[in-house]
Image 1 (cartoon, rainbow, N blue to C red):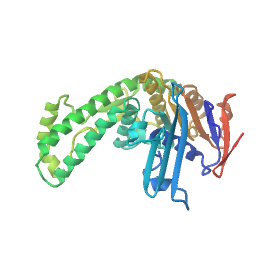
Image 2 (image 1 turned 30 degrees about the vertical axis):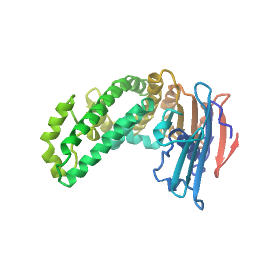
Image 3 (image 1 turned 180 degrees about the vertical axis):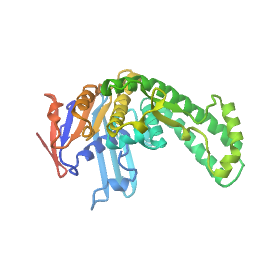
Image 4 (image 1 turned 90 degrees about the vertical axis):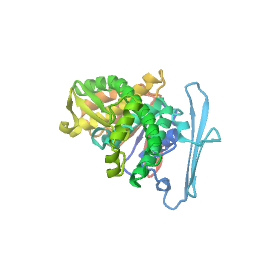
Amino acid sequence: MDLLSREVYFVGDNGQGKSNLLETLYMSAYGSSFRTRNEAELVRDGKDAYSVRSIFRDPAEHTHTIGITYQEGKKRIEKNAKAVADRKELVDTIPCVLFSHEDLDFASGSPERKRFFIDQSLSMYDPSYIDVLRTYKRVLKSRNALLRDRSSNLLDVLDVQLAQAGLEVKIRRQRTIRDFNRVFARLYREVSGIDNVTIDYSPSWKEDTVEGILERLAERRDLDFSMGTSMSGPHRDRIRFVRGRTSFVPTASTGQRRLLSLLLRTAQATFYTEVSRGRKPVLLMDDVLLELDPDKRQRFTALLPEYDQLFCTFLPGEPFERYRRSTTRVYMINGGTWNAE
């Protein structure tokens, strides 16, 4: 299969393997699946292992290889034949932005999923944030264990560590959402015709200093003990979509929510290119245009951000011919096999 074209389309009925191809590309970029965290679920029935091998060129035209194997419950990732100890090392290797049906969670799902989207957008251009977030989560886990055991030993020490890491998480989220809104609000207006839709960030900690956060933690310690968990911190930040000052999603139609999720991904790709000084991501689009009416679909595709490559999946009845170019590669997928159109 030749994947060197700037646009590659996979066309086939449901269950034929189109999404598996996108999943393989995503795994090459990030070392994990976008469908599951259970590696065993990725192994074909009757098999006991899987492997992925990709060859790609970076912006400087250097050739690299990514190899992923899973066998006997153990996973190994290699980059240029050297073991990758931390998937963080892959983050800026092949920057991918995935558009999928599950993205609707970012618009109308749980607060955790909305925080995940912002953290992912931030990590794409600043891998150091991954360490900050990991530190916060590690300290939070230890602190919650003490709260459940009703033990105050080391709690003062952990509170300092939690405040330091948590404040850094808050500062970086605030800065990212502020800059991200410039891109997102413009895109939403141009496609939907609805003005002034933005992301609103309400941090759990209103304090802007470690000392202020420590005072807050001390004041709420009895509540934390009674609940057996930390009731404040970045893990409880609220992110919502507003029009002006009014919450937008609760009154939005299903179509508006779907468009919102698509434009979040579009803004993510555009934002990445801006902050990474022109580097273009690879776009993976998994049957995401079905629910848009023809007019919005045309406007959306016209506003796709600049990309290094674009991989799309379509059902046979979709008008994918409208979007293809003279250089676009189209593969018909059936039963896990492919044929060039």
